[in-house]
Amino acid sequence: MKRYQFYGWESALVPAKTSEYKGIENPQDLYDALSHIWCADTCAPRMRDKWTKENMTMGQCSITSFLCQDIFGGKVYGVLRPGGNYHCYNLIGDAKFDLTSEQFGDEILSYEDNSEQSREVHFAKEEKYLRYLELKEKLLKYCKENSLN
Image 1 (cartoon, one colour):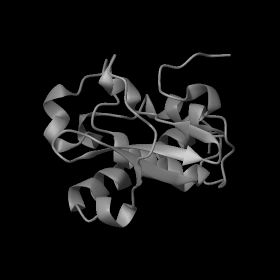
Image 2 (cartoon, helix red, strand yellow):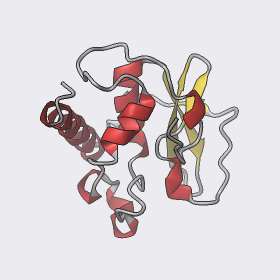
Image 3 (tube, helix red, strand yellow):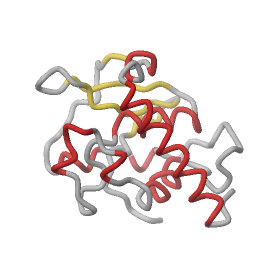
């Protein structure tokens, strides 16, 4: 079994609830595909100067978590960060995982007692909604080009 570095990777095996992204059978598959797609353009603007291919999950949390929710269901939660922003992750049944946790390096985040996040609040920021749409489009294209869709 392939080992991943993101939080909760061992339990990130829930099945997709949609066939729109054929070949994306579980969140580990999604991570594999996104690792080819995440880029500075999909990174939160305030973090773009820190984004690198070596730190590809930087600034990708909310759009990734909501795209993951589209594919697998469940809920999106947020860890309150200094400055008042939330770092988003997914909870699907008993599976709690954070596809973008690697951006924090050795910092340990608390994934307990956090508030549920809504796409209405996050996507009220037009730039964030547009980045989400771009990530979704790139994923669909990647699946098609790699015979996954």
